[in-house]
Length: 460
Ligand code: F6P
Image (cartoon, rainbow, N blue to C red; front, side, top):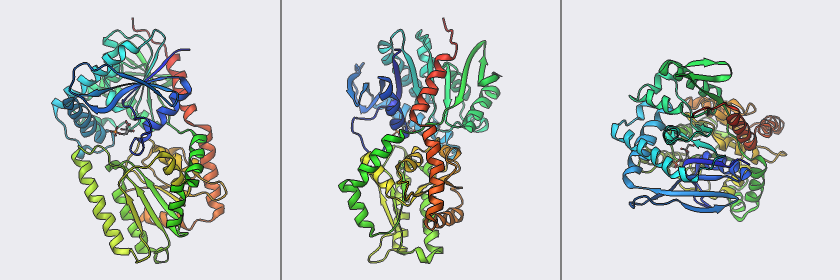
């Protein structure tokens, strides 16, 4: 069997809980089926030169991880990945902090990843690179004579042409992407944006089946919406509900329905507006005061980026404001938890919730929305509210789909979700569950890999 090597910026530490995000969960599930190797940064800083990767095995997956130097972390990870690419690809040019030096760091570390990878590659390897931190990795692998199939999957949105070209090196980035044989995007909108950028930015020619031709070389793009392992999510949710943690949460609610949000602490997740919408609902629906609890779990993330530190302060202020305004001696309306929990506990919390409240201002997919659906009890399922700017809303047609910028609209929708009949809840949930069953994580990775090996590649 061909060996599968997955490369991503961060490799989750064994048993890590909390802030890992959708990539870690999705990729881990895909790799477990493929007896694969996962290569990437171990999340640590080390100033030594040429540190050899550490090898270990965990949950049926082999890992090879290495540290980064402080300067590389600052320029590649914080500077270019998270102060330029992240806001830009989430349609937030206002938050872009562009600095040419950081691009140099980004490229240096992408090449470093290529160097770490080379000794691990076998003649029959298939290499699958993940996310915006490693756009240039394929280009450096080609420079180092790697002629194997190279796949790339972008977990975040791909911006429209007019947004992408805000950064001076947009053409360079597009050229780097053309080094891969297959580019996977989350949704048809991202795919359309990508194809448009290739045409307008580089003058590429489009052929049938999203095959792109650039300077005589052909490669392919496609929409492959990432998903979850439905059986595993359900098993964890049941165990989580029955666990001591789950039971403690249930007891603390005193029978009140739970509204839940789970997101890394990130401005793209729309938690500020979500808090405002909850406040508006309490303002409007007096009958629900004292009768509902909203729990927002937001583990800190990218704390060295100024925007994230600022957001943390803002959310603490708004959460305090909502509670100050509406709390009673025997009721706290909003529980804002600025920390992560074990995945099993979170899955249990999702199962116990009446409403999944996920309102990102822009999101590649939002796997928590899918986990919420998978976690539900079919006899008493909760209602999913999801932003129309999250990839998940394009698949989960039984959800209440909101515009996260419309605070009044979201407030009304929350009230509707909290008062929805059991019959409607069941009907909506069943539709979403059927879709999840059809496109689960195994289907996602199988479809991507089958397409990758079928794309003709000739690089000699
Ligand atoms: O899904 C987007 C993403 O940036 C992933 O690449 C990453 O694994 C996750 O979110 C968490 O981000 P970070 O590694 O910056 O904490």
